Image 1 (cartoon, rainbow, N blue to C red):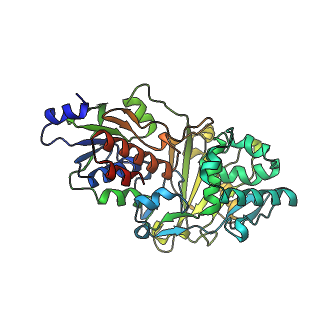
Image 2 (cartoon, rainbow, N blue to C red; image 1 turned 90 degrees about the vertical axis):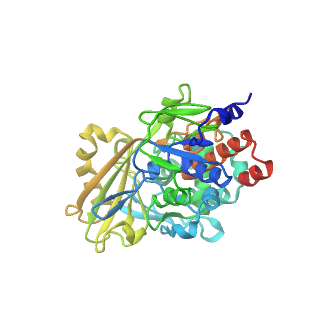
Image 3 (cartoon, helix red, strand yellow; image 1 turned 180 degrees about the vertical axis):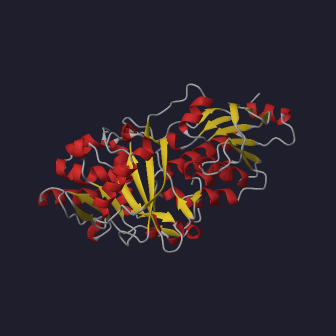
Length: 440
């Protein structure tokens, strides 16, 4: 007898059809779709906040986005799952600024004439710059499926094999991909790097006016009353329900594990645990913006083979809602864990502050250090060979989703949720027409 048929007879009336473990982006998207198909769902979240790594954090009137994530208007899945108009997306300025050898250089609008980039600065010879512009234009025009059919290696090896000079890679592409992938060593799958550069060349980086937390909050607000249960820690999962630390057993016809990768591996021993890219974000407050435009500022210098920091962004230039009136909020991302050799995240702050003064060309000694947030498991690494469609169905009644099953992006988290939802609906016997609409 199929597990879901057995569960229909043994569940209590108060038990849901589906339990979703984790109220991050993938879990909330899964719950929203399943409830839309008439299923009763309980989302069990161990913490008191929804959103996972996109959870809302406010301090002294400042809105803090942790992990350095940005949305891209070229990502198709957010457009399918979210009301982007209500999010009031605030685009960053076209292109990026790269600080190198004591100066800032603008890497121009990737959607300029003929969809090529206006590349200026110490990024190689005129031939190198022309080659890069042409490569970005081709990426923008190439269908994603063709990129995924390319031979796979690391991003670093692929860029070198394609004829990009070391100055172009180290001076521009490494800091840019470091900011987009949290991987300054470029060990990421070349296929994933191509997809990310393609989206960068085709779309615009942006943030919701109310911060990244607005994304999970929008998904949660449409859930039926009683669907979301915070402060409920799940200790074990099976195809017919879960055990919790303080709320006993809850039975269900299906269970979707939608936690971060480490928590998922703890609950399902044998599940692949990826390596992670640690991300640390430092927040400083100034009386006014050191730039006056919402542009991503990359650190293009690598003393000793590693940049002091990855990138910085004046969040209050992106949206006034990030800071109280008359204050500027600067978020700076440091990648990796090496900085803890200097006494931990807080102990490294003076190094970050000195580097920020150089990058922004501003007197930063008077800036207020607001706080720091270190996420050791911020971004699942995606070395080659990387499976962009890692299985989401463990067995009938038990499923797993999250960015660790796809790509380590908002796009990947939402795609994995769609795939897991499709599997649940199929196993529970939801009509094929409804499932086809969900998969579209």
